[in-house]
Image 1: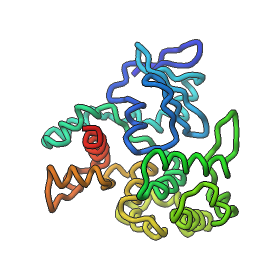
Image 2: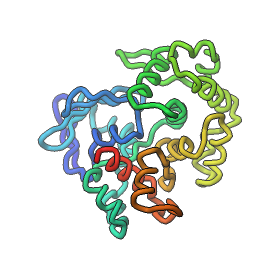
Image 3: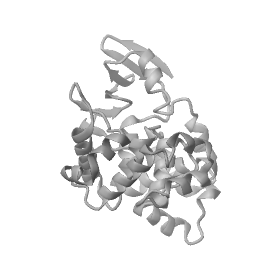
Image 4: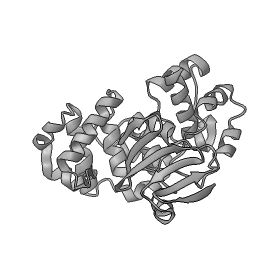
Length: 272
């Protein structure tokens, strides 16, 4: 991996198994905009990140290496050796095939509260509508800076109340958004303790929130807390399991990086 200084930003060169565009599109985050096949805007870590495909790698506009390392190195999980993780799945033909189209996927380390609310919104929903509701929530309660709206805090949402959430048109999910925010704001659910609990305890802790079942909890643990063994099962992954593994499939057999395998399977099955 090499950082190349550019007059307008930086170029990340020779970074294997990293495709930020593919990573955005694999269902793990919702605050991004596809400008073109070669340009995405990602809203993360309190700012807009303008990413362009470049002949030498990936060009990140209007950011220097110091800020990128501080804000986005861990966010993009760039210290992890994904080539070794891929190698660990060589015994599984289904995952190995999925890797052929998804080897650039990395797990983003997103803000835990934003991830929690985003995946509550994702229930029984399609990605365009999920993105629209989240953007409406940010415009309603977030702070504006240079055209970017920050994600609201739990306290902001509690203060807004159930009626105040009506403009975002989240339907039945509004009461779940409010319940999650109340539990986080009151510290009944202490998000800072989730990483210390271990997977099973953390899963059960999140399921105390109304509307949070196994699928949503696993998404939050994987994308918001770095529990890589978490294995969310949505409609696409459910089809892969039925078609390729059958009854009795246990994600634990995939080991400590089952969640990364899930992303390969999700991406491959959805796009095949």
